[in-house]
Amino acid sequence: MKAIAVFPGKPNSAHLAELPKPSVSDVSDGRGVLVRVLRVGVDGTDKEINAAEYGAAPPGFDFLVLGHESLGEVVEVGEKVTEVKPGDYVVAIVRCPGSSIYDQIGSSDMTLDDVYYERGISHRHGFLTEYYVDDAEYLVKVPQALRDVGVLLEPLTIVEKGITQAYEIQRRLRIWRPKRAAVMGAGTVGLLATLALRLRGVDVTTFALDGKPNPNAELVEALDARYLSTKEVTIKQGAKTFGPFDLIFEATGASVVVFESMQSLGKDGVIVLSSITGGNRTLEVPADRINLDFVLGNKVMVGTVNANRDHYEAGVRDMAQAQTVYPGWLRQLMTHPVAGLENFKELFDTLSGAKGAIKVYCEVAA
Image (tube, rainbow, N blue to C red; front, side, top):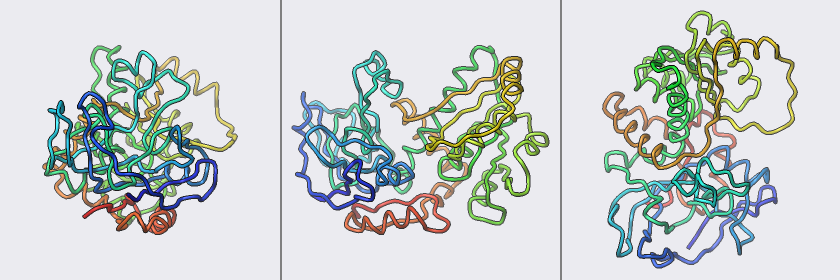
């Protein structure tokens, strides 16, 4: 069967690879589930792996199959599988368990291991292929009503984990009901963070670079949230007018925004970082003032990356609610489809340069 793969460490090595079709018997104890891949979203992670910035092939292979944002249909199940049946739609959990105590209790997203295992990223093949097989434990069922937008679940789980961590941390305050939040960035994750916070009744101000009008701003405002262009209003100015912010979700990929956000967080607030910033940028920041404000203001900063089953299931619930509260909104994020694995060059070209792209994805099967 066909797959889109790279040679880790070799820049721009995306190519069409061949793999044998997997079988439910590849998973022990009758727990295997064979899944036909329908759609796979691509994002900056895939672009960075193809640029040889990171990524690792599974043992016994010199290539890595890409793709960590999946939606598939169950084809066959092992004799001991009760959670799903043929015809069900599923999304696979990206992080695979390692050996630490957190891996053993179902929280592999919080592993202590130096080597970790992620589908399409590190030491495990991804989903840009025709079929895959996995243990039913690592598949999350998606309702029929979410079939058109189910491929958005994986990026939404990053948001769900970040918001969950914020609430868990703030249990220290006994009562914490955030009223005002800021989202930094209006890309896919920023838009999904705006959605998740609005579903929780929070007043949201989303900051992004581009001025209005633009499609992302329209999507933000369709949620009754506020869109501000940082070309027109600085983050500090926005915080003074629409804050103080009880929660800030940062999703820009720009470290300078992280430090600006830290200076705009209200007392007893939490800032959630979802960006992974590479490079060696050096900034001059008011370090003493930031440190003082965080200590005296009981502020917290936490990162979110990957997710476990609880976050996937929370994402399914939020997506289902969004379909009712904001009908058609999620579908508008699905902006740039590319048909067929064989068109991998078009897929990466679209990811790198398509104007107005929110979610680029491969239509693997009809």
